[in-house]
Image 1 (tube, one colour):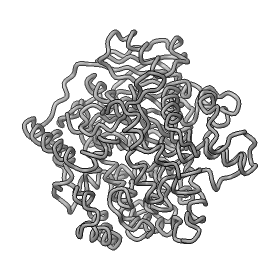
Image 2 (tube, one colour):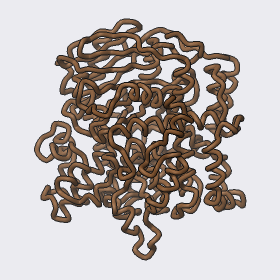
Image 3 (cartoon, helix red, strand yellow):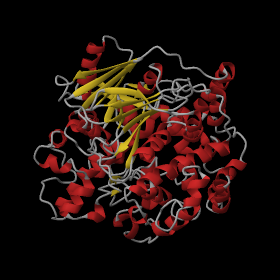
Length: 636
């Protein structure tokens, strides 16, 4: 359907794999105003179709591949696109965000989103070129790893200027934490690759020659120049991230007891210097890379077996380093490459392995795996991807393994999704975020409050004060950044740079102390965000939407839209049984102090949850109230 707004292409396509038919899906400008794009757009579509009876492996399950309105407009770090579906890992609706160029090429083909339903009768891949949708046999592609698959697709498409999504053997064999890969980037979490695999859809390619327009080209150009300069001048986005990528956080996490070690039994790893960002940058990095239109360039390139390949990020370094007590950077580089090639999420793979090691250590499951013993791990990844031997069990993830063998207290997951590398007993706001995250143990969907609790500022990391309100605000902001098609790293520059460069300065020290006393003020902003009818000089996103789309946008409206998206996902997940009991953490994190001499080094989850539910306008069981849903225009 045509749109009055720039940035959008004005078309959403519904693809039925069972019948190989394609039709346009109605999506109005009112939908665009309320649900923007990305994961919130996808949540609305899933909300309109899911009853709560669907399963991940069913023809009724939908895959929604959605772009943001800023994708392809030249905004900083605006190449992101989103995959949402019903997760085989959590049983809930989920979103997995990805960089690369697929979103740009999808819009160049003339589409804002694809909705995929049904199941292919045989193994297939889909080629989209402008208004042509052609299904091809994927028999010759089936079984290929992701790089080989993408190379073969280039031969079939006949050129290199196209977007591509592929799955590896892990997705084909329904590994519950398998990924969908685009170039070197992955929609890695919650098992979206397995949904592709069940639907017998090996790959999608897309290309086209449609123009992506902006509302006010001159203002867009001037604003873009200003924003790029701001990001390059900020200590996080202009120095730390380009210099070391996310890997640069390993040392900071170690210093503050935030680095998950030995399956989260500790927060510091004695050999961290062998697997930190400095070692990666100085001894292994070949060149920095970035996604389309990205000034930050956080990706590393390393050599594995003589090949220049994508290097590991923080999560992989932390969880395949201290998480399993491995101090070999060479091992991590190789394993990261192998997992990417097989199409598996490194976070869940590493945490599942750590659970198995501890279960073996405690005599619950005789599997031969031990902390600090790395022999045979490469073969183990291949066994998981092909569901051979013990790999068939490990492919199920830590939650299901703990239900079979015991050890639920140290299966480091929530809602079925394994946690990221941040040890939350030294960052309790991050612990709350893990627990209430819509997609499970995700640091980003959880609000990433750890940036206040030691990785940016130095707010009291143990107190629950103000953490619920701050978590809500950060979740709403990050929700909207994803919806617009931008990388969440652009939010790193939200706090003025001098707060990082002068950590002991008077203003920084005062800011750190005052934050935990501002819960009431943050609550007021969260409750009445539209009163903030302004643009913040440190937050360039709102003006970009105004100039590029011609859609009125203020900071307050931006927060409200993010709130709508977060509640919409929760509303749909309620249909699949989510309640307060699912907003949980393993007992290791809530009942066992990280420091035996400091009883405060646990996550006071229930205290924070109560405040968080009240702030969100949810009832005691974690359900958005009718009043909240009506306020956010989720229901009429």
